[in-house]
Image (cartoon, rainbow, N blue to C red):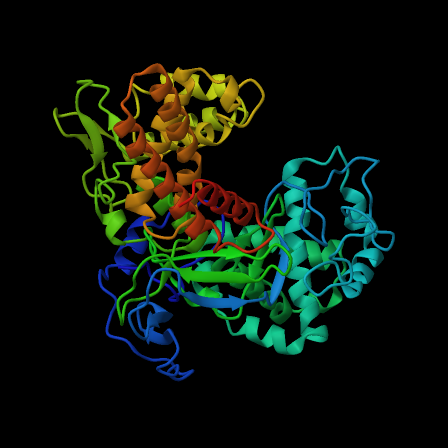
Amino acid sequence: MPGRKKVHHKGNKARHQCHQRAERDNKGEQIPPEKESEDGPSPSSTPFRIAQSELFGRYLVANRQLEAGELLITEEPLAIGPCVSGDAVCLGCYQPVGLGRGQYRCPGCGWPLCGASCPGLGRRVGHTTEECALYGERRPAAADLLNDRTSPPSVRDLYELVMIVRILLMRTHAADQFAMIAHMESHTDERRKNEALWSHYEQKVVVRLRDEWKLGDLATEEEALAVHEICGILDVNCFEIGQKGAKARTLYPSAFLLAHDCSPNTAHTDDPRSFAILLRTSRRVREQEALTLSYAYTLQGTLKRRSFMYEGKLFWCRCQRCADPQELGSDCSALVCRSCLRGTVRAVTPLEQTADWACDRCDHRTNALDLEHQLDRINNDLESIDVHDITGLENFLLRYREVLRPNHYLLLSAKYSLCQIYGRIKGYLLPEMSSQDIVRKERYCREFLAIIDLLEPGLTRLRGLIMYELHAPVMVMAQMGLQSGQISRQDFQRRLKEVARLLQNSRDILLLEPEGSSEHEMGLAAADAVTKMGI
């Protein structure tokens, strides 16, 4: 069952406590009988139509059986802006920028840009002349506050305003597009009940725009409420995108209608030049089945994933994966029992967020809140390790192997990093690697792929990437085994067939990515390797 979509149950990042009420609000476990949207049915020749239910609001349903890889939606953004983070980016192309004295800045408003020839200058999806004029008039309260001494939270607060201001400007300069955005759900009534969430946007956005940036038309209560509506629309409907280092958030005309599921049946990517979204089926979809995507990172465990969605979207997911203590067989939340050291600790009733977790071999139980704090500490430990630090990542795996089960998402995250950097950094390039390191890379790739096959099956980007990473150690170890006489010629041929299959699957998946993306380039490399193998 996809998560609830459009019934006043989404928000942003403030922490809050409404667990019991929210659990009561989201009891449905099947999509209710649909009725056609007020927008009318889509023609039967199209792959999907808009359906509507009291529980989910508007959502998309397959008009017919859809095969894996069918392109469902490709559309350019209605609005785009920097992500809400502590990272400074160019307002034209969303590539990272510095805040020091040497960083190029817009001559008109002073905001950091990647350079004078940024392709996003003057473009609708970049730094427009209208935006520049508004910021230029408010330079002391805006760009002048961005320097190398500015704290990450302050940087985040300033960049959070950018997309909100852009949408406000659209009321005058792009009225038709603004009307499409205004039609999206904001769930303002539900958000107003959340004191921490409402206060965050009142102080960080409304008051700042009104009192510091002197946007005079926000003086009335009605206009202030309109800003809250925009904040809600962004929280509920925006996508985070980016290729080759760029980071942005976007609103699209129809992609926001997909319902949520923690093991979705679609995959999306974005064009690095136009920021258009490309959304495809990742597996076969039955006629009448809801089209879904995941609002959370699929390689998180249920406790953190559900918590993230409630904090960010104000609903508790009750999909099949969330309801399963073993998460569709992946067991990516399981811990080692610290009491008996032999059993496995899992959620007993995973849809009850605060319920205890229990060992399957002894009477030991763990409080969910304590467990969440423990996971936060382990995650902080992982994030403190440089992504290129092989020794640090390997030590992380050793440090927690008696705490977390092998498929736990935090261990998988470290393993995925190692899959990517083994064979790619100085001192660990394939010709330099020991056979033990090559075997280790192969093992991590296989372990990661086994979980992805459960949680993101089909034509998904992670499957394509990890299969490409896996082909190299399989090939190298096969060659080494044949040369040393450790494997037979028949065994060697069998392994070559596996290499060919991995490359073909990787090619077929990654060439679906947009041209210019790093994934598409990897797909071309896989295609070239297949050709050279004479397949």
